[in-house]
Image (tube, rainbow, N blue to C red; front, side):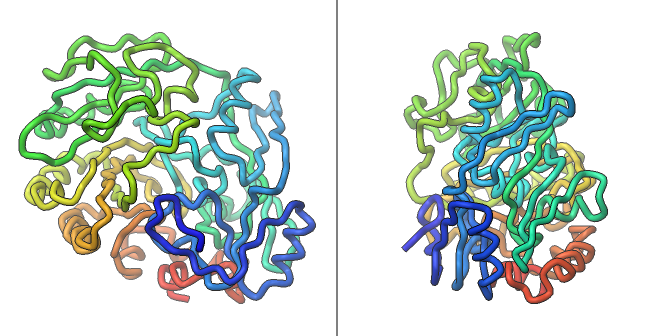
Amino acid sequence: MAKNWSGTVDFKDLVAASPASLEELKSLIAASEKVRARGSAHCFNDIADTSATSVSLANMSGEIAIDKESRTVRVPAGLKYGELAVALNERGWAIHNMASLPHISVAGAVATATHGSGVGNGNLATAVVGLEIVLPDGSLKRVSKGDANFEGYVVGLGLTGVVVNLDLAIEPTFNISQTVYRGMSRESYAANLDEIMSLAYSVSYFTTWAAAGGGEVWAKFRSGTTAPTELFEAYPATSNRHPLPGLNPEPCTEQMAVSGPWHLRLPHFKMEFTPSAGDEIQSEFFVARKDAPAAIAALEKIAPQINEILWVTEIRAIAADELWMSPHYQRDSIGIHFTWKKVDAVYEMVKVVEATLAPFNYRPHLGKVFSASPEYLDSVMPKMEDFKNLVNEIDPVNKFGNVFTDKLLGR
């Protein structure tokens, strides 16, 4: 039985299809009563599941195509970010950011607004300037930035069509150096959050919510920027680190202020390694950046409960965007991510975390574990109703939906 990336969700596919051509995909979709696209399955809830036909585009060959004049690249949907990054860098180009790991498919990451960090960096979906999608009747449609409802199609949760190609904005390649600062207490981090998160091109803060010991700031500096020798009484590590305390740092991208290409520094993990602490469950909740210090202070009250079943928390910054189903829609955000141990207690703990963050109008990562009701999501996602209308227009028979999305949209 197929599983998600960490082995915590058993997929219930009746048929698992892997078409080798666009025509085969179009015929499959047209003939199917229900079909659900699935990428690298780096998800922690049932968003990618189906009891009917799943479709993977991993076998659909396709080359990337760079348009130097428009500074865009056309990318096959099933390509992994790590593969795209190597191909771009070899040609002297880059995308604006990458997620913590490069092993995820481009279309799947875009569909769920996957992100890296950086106060000036939007999530990965914000690079999209065009989509080619297959509609429920098997026809092909192109949607471009500036078209009506474009911002509704991009973070489509698999509901606005099966994406076959994406056009992404690119820029000339650049170098990054990474410095890890050890001994940063949560109190000091929260008190100086804006300054710390603005320190470098991409910044993450790691903590286990333990009572003793500081966390770590992972700062990724674009070439031409010098890392400070001290950061609010936290100091650079003297050897490479892993985000999970005590683990071998070999799978992690180069640190120690050694400059290198963007794609070998922006992710935390190297493409040639599979990063995992074993079976794990992930959740992530986004609050407005201005509310983040107060949100962290609120979580401090339940820190012992969190620590008991947690591997690590990563806190990141994401710039506001205009994508309808993005959790960063029109809101500069701080993402508070939890990598939980695989224990049943996590699901109740997630509810406690959500209750703690509710006063800050948190928005959950829809590809990770959350318990928020559809009514709550309607209240914090300003474009939810518009998205529902768009999905109903594109797919009135709900061919692309599943149990998860039916609950989410009330279908």
